[in-house]
Length: 491
Image (cartoon, rainbow, N blue to C red; front, side, top):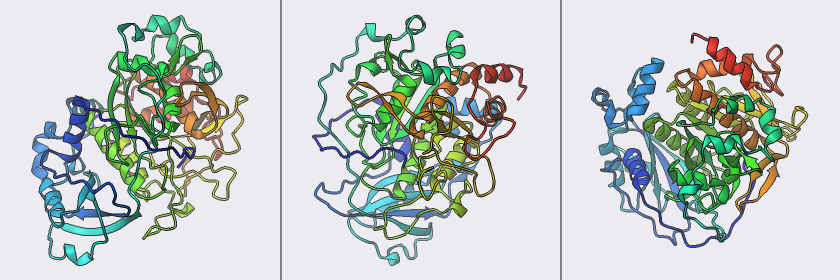
């Protein structure tokens, strides 16, 4: 992954509730899905991907049972037809699998792959599935300790937003950028802000490894005061709390939505956000790509507009029962599960931004999964002088597509830590959200343009448009030029 490694002491988990969580469970698992918990003391678990043979095609006649009104409206505007991929997994199949053993737990389901991932207390003999005509095949994808939160001691902040904490355009307009000025001006984002484009009404999802203290840090209070945190869920630990884990996601979110008057402004502080933990900081396994897939499908279901993922995969832990690690020959945008999911999101009309990776100084040196996906922005990193960061991963893909697509500031990027302090961080993990949140403001002005159109326009108006290469891609975006080109575009 692209996240920095963090090891935290575990503390008692907080319990959260609300309509957003209810909606999440309703869509993800369906009410008929059975849920069993493995005992907390269980040290080792096994995860299997169970692939099914068919779906109930008749469900396409009533799409509002599995896609939101917003999603369906977007599909109509972009001319995207419903397909068998949109139909949920047959819940009776999932129930039948869960009934085979009392210790089975449902980890997640994927309609795009037509599979379920289940967890068991010990290994399963393949013969258990013999004669089950609805199962195509099964695969052992994980053996090891259950994912656990990287929880840490709580910082003593006030966590009760007041009406005065609501953020308005006027307040943003009158506040200097402070520490973010360099990274904002590099992409000519103030042009968008002067047009009062701060991400209003755009729904952004962030996939990461933890959002420590986002619910209590002063810089994010405005999100809660205005009810602009829409969903949160931890796909790694299967719990409805992402705020007690590592702070990599906190730093990422700061680039997008942080606000400290006179000191710090993220690029899209007035957008709506959903926060998903898909990454387990203790392991590097294929399960994390399945988590990415589950989160992606949920985003499509509820009408998310744009996604930032500061995650990437190349090599997995050696103690796993199957080696799912990648080599360069697999960087075609189709092999990786997360790459498959990212491409699907693009086909469904959702913009995706993913960090290119931080392997430029390593023997691997190339981009990771899902940065190789088609139809998405893979974002490299530059320094304040717009020179490539030495660590920023290289392209192209094995099928010779330009990657990274574009670059943004990723050396000494201004962020906010999990303890609420303004600091700096290095990595494409931060160039991606800096770009993504600027793209969010542009999407606000052009909500019915396709991902394909945004990619084409932004690349053609970037600094290296005439000579894209494997280090910088199409170069540094210019959001004023992109804005003007989109105004003229008939696509």
